[in-house]
Image 1 (cartoon, helix red, strand yellow):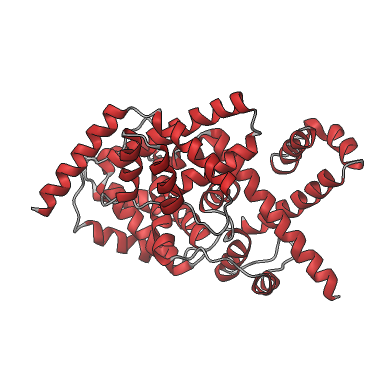
Image 2 (tube, each protein chain N blue to C red; image 1 turned 90 degrees about the vertical axis):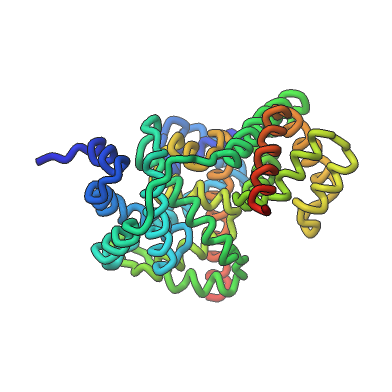
Length: 189
Length: 206
């Protein structure tokens, strides 16, 4: 039998834990992807997913259906992940030697290549950790999670022009970094 | 300006797969080293982003769900939102957007140059803790209620700007921008919020 998502959300808002359990099962993989892509670490991402769903449960009654439930949920996960990053002060600069080494470990040439979580985390942190916090978030939400501009605007409380500008700078920085790596590789051959 | 437009079109082509401007881009980059190198960088970025899009595997999903559900047994559901800080951020951001449009129109500042500054300013504001002990944010607002250019300048130079990488010109620009933006806020509403927060702090202290 088809389950009506709105019905599940309404039940969870009214304190139905079984319905909330269904929401957790339905969304936890996506929530994990988002948290992981922000913090680049499996254990931290699990903690963030756990904390976020507890916040979501506590605040279910405050959810207003004028925005999509998933967008509201991603906003909570994003904020929890950012708080986590700030508390651990993980936004370190990566020097070019470390960066090259880290990139080498993840330098895969075919889309079929399977990367494990650690390698995916290293790849993202190599390229995205030197972005500003806002650039990184816009990049993760838009390019990695595949959300559309209006969802990113809602999650980050930013106007479209700012989303566009941050995405432009993020992609540019990633492209420039890749060129540095490639020219470094060419220079040592 | 032409190159900036071409770069936007390169973004559309590479990242949104919109081929509308393919011919224009192609003929422009033949004679423009800067855009050619931007094109090459964008192709590389697209490729590496494709690799980053690989989905991480969530280990033991059942275990995680169980852990979450066992914890929610211990917590209730809140019915009393406290969105006052969010409201201040919204006001500041809306005002920054308004100020940016004015600056673009009045000074003819290029969009990306301006948004760099706006983004930095917004980041500095939003990086302040969302907890209620938010001294810096309320200081900014208080300064603007009785606006004094010198004090305000000093405040931003001291509290919000790292002196390592910003020159005086940027600082003056940002101060002017911030002043324009925050002065547009509804002083009455902000005063009310400050009073509420102050009253709550006093209650908490007691």
